[in-house]
Amino acid sequence: MRRRGLLAVLIVLLLGGCSVGPDYQTPTSPMPAAYSEPGATSRSDDMREWWHLFQDPELESLVDRALNGNPDLQSALSRIREARALAVMAGAALLPQIDADGSVNHTHISQNSGLGSLATLFSGAQNGSGFAFPGGGLTTYSVGFDASWEIDIFGGVRRSVESAVATADQAAWTSRDVRISLVAEVANDYLALRAAQRQVVTVRRDVARQQEILALLSAQRRFGFVTAMTVRDQQGQVSAAEAMLPDLDSEIALQAHALALLLGEAPAALLAELIPVAALPAAPPLVPLGLPSDLLRRRPDIRAAERALAATSARIGVAVADLYPKFSLTGAFDFIALDPGHLFKRPSRQYSAAGAISWPIFEGGQIRANIQVQQEEDAQALLTYRATVLGALKDVENALTRLREERSKNATLHEQLSRAQEAVAVARGRYEAGLTPLTPVLNGQGAALTAERDIATSDAALDRDMVSLFKALGG
Image (cartoon, rainbow, N blue to C red; front, side, top):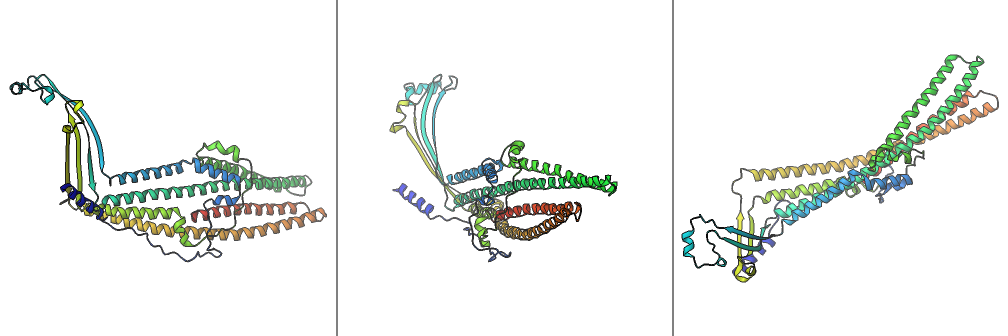
């Protein structure tokens, strides 16, 4: 009855125990009702695989391979598994710890130990009775288990589990943030490569045009219609156009190297695949953005910062629990015998049980200082969370602004190209009618090629801005 009463008291204490420290509440984050950029929609779409909107099979293949082979992403996934294992370790402290043990112990008694007189007193004793004579030996066998349990009455262990679980969640969201950054980097490098290839095509056309002008001027020089300096100036124009090609070729190779590393491959692994010229994919139309409040669930960095805040809040409770007493139970049960045949018989039983309490009396202010440390870390985590939310809003607004301005610039450049092409058509008509020489036609083509290069640069910027927007939205 006495044992049952003690067990009942312990159960009541355990079940009625409280968890000291603050109970975590998700912080409130005031968000604007809508984005400031005009045209932003309130409908939200699933953008987890936004790169498919570019409708480029090569880009899709590169992203898939990067998600499977990138070392940084694999490292982030490993950190998730590590954090989850640490959470399991923290939870193990809530349960009793039980260890099994077994031993065989043989002791040889020294003949010169001064036990001769003692041996005569027990001269009738046999070895199996538990005594041994000098010069003889004694062998004992034991098997059993021992258990210990620190009862988490004030919730310090439960708070540590809460912190470990929040940390594991933080690692998971951080991994998703790494994934988003990886996809955006793959897309940007690929788009930059295709943009450089498009520039190469345009520059080569310009080189051909400049060479045609040089040939025309050289013919005119032979007949004395232009000076030698005019020819030399045009030769400089040809050289300047040709000088742009090595830099572009180098940029294409460097982007291919960067993409290979993102995929976890050797730098030159993608050269044969990517060097052939392909079109720059067009930026998709502006997707529905959703409300600014959607960022709180979409952005992995916000979710990670919120989980970090939850972890620091729980660690305050762990520190506060050190102010209170700790209760523990220990027990052991063994079978001990001199003969293995008697080991598991009832008379061979041996057991013990104990309860203990420990309570810090004087520790020089260390516990309360640790509580203050944890409180300050929690305050810092809250400020980090709020800064992350504001940073997310800024990222979206900046991306929308750049996208709007680039779209306007792109439309203007297309108008310029249209006018330049019309001018070329007029000049060619006059040339074919014999009214003007070929030079105005070639100069007009130069203006059109310049507009084409500017449009290529703008199209690449539009693609990058769209990628930045998807990343900012947490896609």
